[in-house]
Image (tube, rainbow, N blue to C red; front, side, top):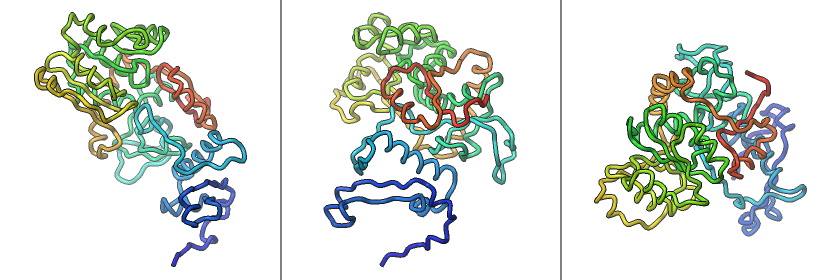
Amino acid sequence: MSVHQPADEFPAFFDQAPVLRVHDTLAQFLGAAAGGVITYRYVDAVRLAGHSCPTVAGAYLMVVKGLGHLYADGQLPERGGIEVMMAEGREDGATGVVAAVGQGVPEWKKGDRVCALVDGGGYAEYVTAPAGQVLPVPAGFSMAQAASLPETAFTVWANVVERGRLAEGETLLVHGGTSGIGVMAIQVAKALGARVFCTVGTPEKAEAALKLGADAAIDYRRRDFMVEVSRLTEGQGVDVILDMVGGPYIERNLKSLAVEGRLVQIAFLQASKVEVDWMRLMLKRLTFTGSTLRARSPEEKERLSRALQDNLWPLLEAGKVKPVIDRAFPLEKAAEAHRRMESSEHVGKILLAVKPGIE
């Protein structure tokens, strides 16, 4: 027996939302849907979420828009036929003006200019964020500049500074030096007094990384980063490596570390399962660690937020660490923004502007 909530219990304007139809091979095989075609409406998303809000509406519309760009007119999206890979963190960074404050939140008030790490749903005009993950827009920063900060700042501080324990006088190798994470890592490490190397994919990106303060930018398409690291460190290796590639890079990273070195993994653009000779880990007393933001508790994210405000925000306001924005796209061109990211041609952060012109 199935129980359905009467349609008239929902606002009539819900019916104005676009309808989503997909083809489901399993449903067709089991005879659960005629021709395997399943129709979803906004009320289905509301029932699943248990409520309607800007985040739910934004997520539903984003799926409809995204599939519309991926599939030609008249072609049904194939359920299970799309694999989504995120090159950077799965959290979203958002910036704006506080519209409302929940009970027991004395530190923020309506009208405050803030940026925040939100647990998804950032592609929307209104978002909700735990108070502990909200930060003030740094003095002198535009809203767009502030929007580039949360996800990269949280990631770099948690992994380079805390897990990697990068100290003044040490050497850091950053893979993907001109990514959103990379440009932040280079600048934070230099501000802490470290020497910084990075890998990049083109001469133009190498030039951009050097301008940000990197001591060396290695074009991995033309040079072996292991050979270059050995040359630059006179065979000693680097103290910390920040890696988002994984796969065959893991063993090569371990070979590139100095004694007592730390390898910090933040993503796997390639394989997460590899065969490695771990004897080197013991002989050089290495540390292989990693983390992701999404799995952390709200309390842990709040602790990180306070660390950022105490340590990184002064560097931002002093101009020692600067936001690097590649391009800003209007929200309706989110698919184009993702194509830009997947092309790996960008330097710095790619932004979505919900309301263009807000500073």
